[in-house]
Amino acid sequence: MTEPRPLSDQIPDQILGRAPDPLNNQAPDRLLEQVLKQASALLDRAEHWLPTTTKPDWNAHAWRWRKNGARGRLEAVQRTHAITLADLCCIDAQRDEIDRNTRQFLAGAGANNTLLWGARGTGKSSLIKALFNTYRERGLRLIEIDKDDLIDLPDILDLIHDRPERFILYCDDLSFDAGESGYKALKAVLDGSIGEPPKNLLIYATSNRRHLLPEPQQENREARMIDGEIHHGEGVEEKVSLSDRFGLWLSFYPFGQAQYLSVCHHWLERLAADRADAAETERAALQWALRRGSRSGRTAWQFARDWAGRQQLSQT
Image (cartoon, rainbow, N blue to C red; front, side):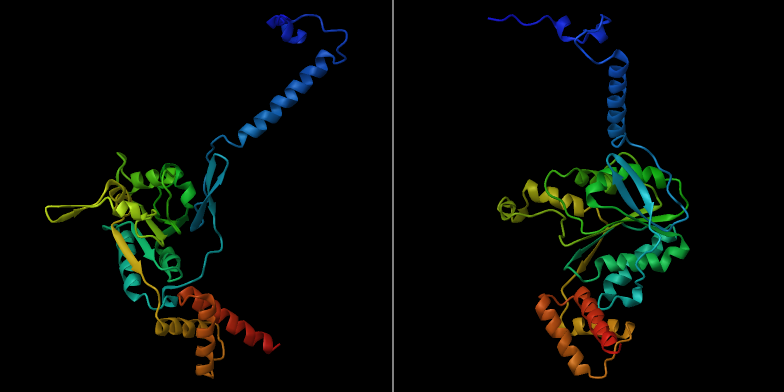
């Protein structure tokens, strides 16, 4: 049985200060150079993951939170969506509620974090963008963050805490799976941290889920009837605890046919499309919705853009 080599024999002679092996054709200087190159390459790779602070461009009005490894920064958005509140049809009640809440916020009065939830394509995200365009000249600013980056919320709060502007933190299509880290970070910022959130920040989030988390049937079976009252299981209570921290809930419902056609006419007018034959236009709009399987504001906008584009092409 072969005995193991002593540890000193396994360490290169150059490190121990012994004379180099004459059979080793690498000179000490060359070996040192290779070690330094490898160390430099390792540091370059590690630098990618080291946190750093980049000063935001406060001359901008809108930003996205961008991640590069462990680094996060507010990246200025120079060209924002040009939609206005007047472009949002058939959601008057929701528009008036969030508009009032935003004006209270700008005035330094009481205002609530807001969850806009409901059917897809009904104007939830567009409403937030339109509010920003309406009030940006009065100091309203918009920060967009992906739900996967919500764990960085404390860093964003530190950046804006002493700023004079009023910020809307906008998170689109917000929903979580069990165990995601951003879930707890958002709960803490909304209501739960020992630190006071900045008075110049509101969170506006959109979601297709009312409680932001999946709700399997099994959790409904955990509910119990006690003295004539329904008591939900712990799983349901945990899910409700997040959405319940939004002070204002706005619900969006699927459009009926009349609402869908109304939105179609609005966008056709905005795009200066020919609507001389209203019956033909509406028939085409309904066929478009049937093929898409959806009568929504988004579908209406897509139809109007296609209809106007066909007309422009035929005139060239």
